[in-house]
Amino acid sequence: MYAEKAHFIYELLQNAEDADATSMILHLRPTELVVRHNGRAFTPHDMDAIAGISKTDNEKKADQDKIGRFGIGSKSVFKVTQRPRIQSGPFDFEMEAYIVPVLLAVNAAYEETTITLPFTGDADAVQSTYLAIEAKLQTLEAFNLLFLRNLRELRLQGENKQRLLTKHAQPNNDRAAPTIQTLNEETHGHPVAPLRYLMFQAAAQHPEFRRLRPPQYVALAFRLAEQEGPVRLVAAESDFAFVFFETAHQTSLDFLVHAPFVTTPSRKNLKPELPVNHALVQELGALLQQTLPYFKKHTLLTISRL
Image (cartoon, rainbow, N blue to C red):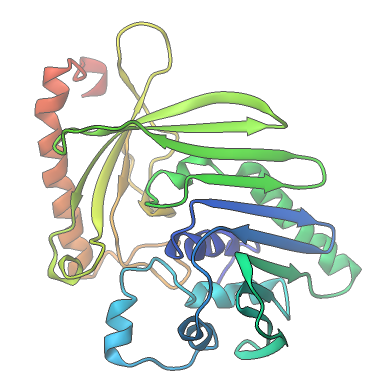
C-alpha cells in the first residue's frame, strides 16, 4: 500500500496536526526515529482507536474532520518497526502485533507526545530504513505546512543535517481578502530564501463537509516573487494537487490547489470518479473566479500569468 518506505512521515505529521500540535520534532538516529510534538495528550478513546477497536457511527462522524487521526496512518509505521512506543499524557505503551497495546508504565504524566520507532530487521534492513528516512527528511518541502491549520514549526534532525521549517501567516482583518503565508527554512542555522504565498480559501460547501467542526475548506495559493520591485506572481514549486499534503495527481497549474478530496488509502492519488471530488473541483473553480477582482485591483493579472 505504501510504495515509498518513508511515506509514513506524512502520516505522523497528520496525526500531530489532528492533535492540534503547533510544533513537531523528527529526530533520526542510526537505529530509530524519535518523534515529539506538543499536541493534545492521548486519551482512553485514542487508545481504543489506535488499537483498531470499532467505533459507533456517532464516534466515526465526530472524527471525520481529522486528516488521519490514528487510522491507517498509525498502522503505516509498521513498515519500519515492529514495536512502536508511545509516551503521551498518562500513557507509556508499545504496540505489539499491530493492535495490542502493552503498557510499560502507569500513571505517567508526559507533557508532550513522544513516539519512538525502533527499526526492524537485520543490519542491512535497518541501514536501508535509515537511509530512506534520511533522504525524506532532507528533501521534505516546506510547502507541506501550507494547508495545515495548526502545525507551524517542524524540526528535522539527523546525523549529518538539521533543518527547521516554519510557517507564518500575516494577519488580515478582511476575511474576504487573501492571507500571505510565509514559509521559512533554516539548514544548520543558515536561512534559506523564504517562500511567500497569497492564499485564498473558502469553506467547503458540499454536504459531506459542511456539518464538520471545524469545517473543511478549499484553497488556492499563488506564489509571490521575492525580488525587489512591484509585487508579482510566479509559478509555484509544485503542480500537483494537495489534500493537506502533496499528492501524485498533477494539475499542470502554476498555483497550488487544496481540497479535502477523497483519496486512495495511501493518500497519494485522488479518486476522480467520485461525485464528491467532482463537486470539490467545481468549488475550486468558483473560488478561482473570486480571486479575479483582487488580482485586477492589485495589478497582478499580467500577460505572462494568463
